[in-house]
Amino acid sequence: MVNIANNLETVKASIEKAALAAGRKPDAVRLVAVTKTHPPEFIEEAIAAGHLLYGENRVQESESKWPLLKEKYVNVRLHLIGPLQSNKAASAVRLFDVIETVDRQKLARALARHMDEIGRRPGCFIQVNTGAEPQKAGILPDQADDFIRQCHDDFQLPVRGLMCIPPVDEEPSLHFALLRELAERNGVEELSMGMSADFEIAVQFGATLVRVGTAVFGTRGDYHKKDNHHQPG
Image (tube, rainbow, N blue to C red):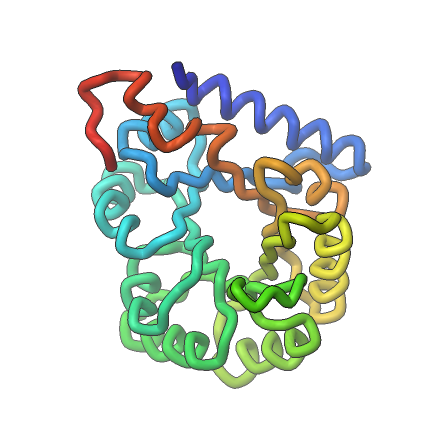
């Protein structure tokens, strides 16, 4: 059985403990509860428990469940934390409050255009491919300085932070340290880094946002265990 309220409490306690151990204020680190593949019923349980910050990986899935949730719960904030195709940029600008995966010039240009057209300016994070993995999205570290400046100066995007996903087979602290260095060098304040397996390490290296899904909501099939009347979202 999934107890979302208890899971949220447990994860937030771990974040607070890691922050204190690193000499940081507990409220300096926020939890992005990742709701990909989970139905609206789960999200509403988390909202009822007082949590208001969420992340989704795909625009199409988000469009199927979040507009009604955001209309009903006006204080909820939604981050896009998965890759974004340029042809979905307008939809992302309309729906998300923060887009964490800006990683190429074509996408930055599209976002800037749609923000002007729609009149809405969600915050932007630059995704950095700290491991230079060919299969993974993100600007390469040696191109990040120029790209951050271009997004800010040329496209006038509201660049709020940097985001990374370290390689699964490498020490994450090396990648978190690199992202922190890039942020400090470019005057960027927010760092979205750390997931279920490594968020406590990320907090030590300055994460302001950590992205956790399974530890809060369980695995994809767990909603069947909660209530066999629930349908897949």
